[in-house]
Length: 404
Ligand SMILES: *[C@@H]1O[C@H](CO)[C@@H](O)[C@H](O)[C@H]1NC(C)=O
Ligand SMILES: *[C@@H]1O[C@H](CO)[C@@H](O)[C@H](O)[C@H]1NC(C)=O
Image (cartoon, rainbow, N blue to C red; front, side, top):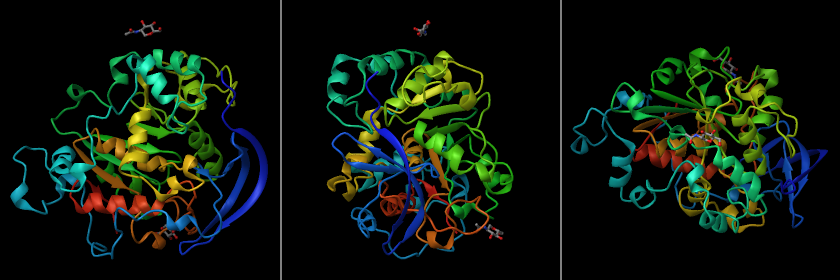
């Protein structure tokens, strides 16, 4: 395979990013990128961290979406199915209240942004010379520049089942309206008692350090999809072990959603489908069964399409001002953001739980922390932009954002 994109050295770093929204944490591991950009990843946190110059990280974001005053704060939240229509005249006659696509297309602003034609998943037939030529000119995280043709191609070749082409099989679900809950890991869920409401959805997405045991009342137990990059998955196991996140969720009907951000994701995915130890690269020797359970089959795994990720990151929803800084190549939406936007492009109704809200300062970083910790802002994410987007989507009636 091509040499791993980032060479990893371990070194202890304490970083404090000051801004109006200040944060701190313990960060480890410096990675050299070709072109000598320095990327700092955290072994204690599932998201990749980039050290930004002091005080710059907060400036990105909020340019497209406004994170206005909290007029909806304190309003009680109801799961989407029970929500009243904010504008009764637009009520859909179907039994599926507020389908995402109808709402999004009808909205003057979001109608211009959503593109439901963009393929969400990638499968074997997408690996054409045209796709290769296009994606090899785009750098990682969501392009194939510098990646091995052999590795990417042989991985995609294995995604040849119908299950690889869509999130779910409509015919297998009992009713015509597919209601999805996407559960982020935000502290807002601590004490929320939303478990029943979450489990009441047809499909439930979870991601990264999704601790369930001990928090069933607040976050539920159902899990249909687990989303991650290999980096965030492995870092979650390290960072949240102390909170009981000792294993990646496993269940017969659970499907894994790979976010391809690096060659590692392709290498791991291939080994997982083949049921063999990772043969090469930085995860060499890892047994995929340890993460995903004994069942090795293409049906178990889905791969987000790099074009879909590119569309979310650079074109429309989450185009951050970070992209035009020296950190531009490292900017990625959070794993939660990618899962929520995946749900918004595939489900009929979407409820978001545990995502950043305008009053995030009142809550701990994660729901499972024993003592309140401030939300950690990583300079390669743009959480304020995400917060404003969720709020706008909620206000537009396209999804429901759990707030309290
Ligand atoms: C998918 O590819 C695998 C490995 O090349 C092959 O064994 C299998 O028969 C293929 N399945 C389908 C549905 O084409
Ligand atoms: C979680 O909620 C409990 C009770 O509601 C509270 O005692 C605890 O401090 C909260 N944890 C955090 C990290 O805020």
